[in-house]
Image 1 (cartoon, rainbow, N blue to C red):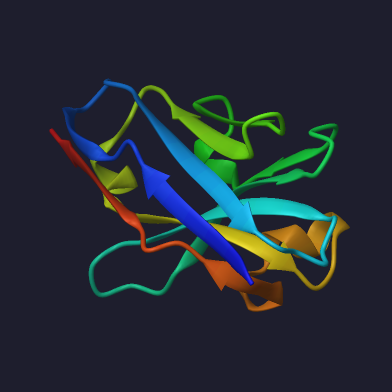
Image 2 (spheres, rainbow, N blue to C red; image 1 turned 180 degrees about the vertical axis):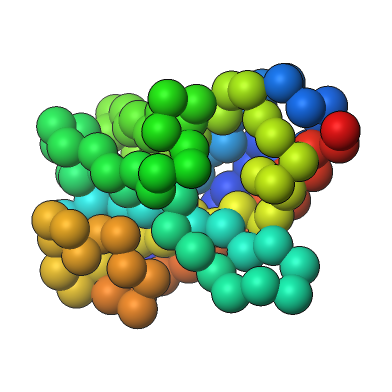
Amino acid sequence: QVQLVESGGGSVEAGGSLRLSCVISGRTFSTYGNGWFRQAPGKERTFVAAITLNGATTYYTDSVKGRFTISRDNAVNTVYLEMNSLKPEDTAVYYCAGDPRLGGSYLQTDRFYRSWGQGTQVTVSS
């Protein structure tokens, strides 16, 4: 069983920055990587970014490319999401995902993940 705990959410004005953290604990049989997803009010959960276990490969949804950066520090079992130039449309609950069944481009698909954090709220005002 893998546990994921997110932190770092909050309220900022447009153009501001936040850094989300996801601490990973417990056993995992997956060595593929982790992802960040978000869910805005009244909308489905969507992919934001993902990173392979060794950090060599990252994936981003088009709307955050150039603004968000996913990274990891395996020494402290933590995955980060650095968010810059935030926009009101980035407002959502952000979820960390782990223990995926498949790797590579499948890291961009939520149904392949077996473990989820509780989510952290990000609110961007105009």
